[in-house]
Length: 188
Image (cartoon, rainbow, N blue to C red; front, side, top):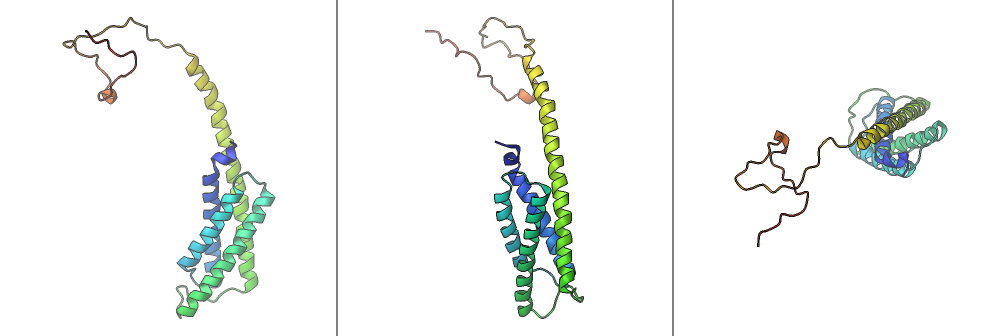
């Protein structure tokens, strides 16, 4: 299993969160109207599904930018459609401002896609560098700790009588029961 496969849910979630949130903020600022909840949910579902398929392996910055541009376009269409449907039902808008021209909205989505792709690429590189560092640091430590022989002396098997008190245990083991070893021999 590759390092990308182990981090697949994390990578999918972060990509979706960054793509949808930045697109929604840019769309609200550009259009002057809020994005309906149905638009956010629909956009999130679409981007999450595509991100899950794509997160099976790592992509370079060019491919990540291309997919981020696709996500921004898909979210722009989804948000615009749900805004138009929502404004047909309601006459008032939550934000009162003049919408930007179409070229400004497209440039805002383009800038959001480029910045988020760059941010995701750097974050993914940092995450995998950290995971490699931890793996390379911990494996030798675990090998050394596992190779050290136990300091407990082996003793012969003793059966304790009922009137002897058991050995004291640390407080975190007071409710534990040791079941290791051969079963006790019953007297016939």
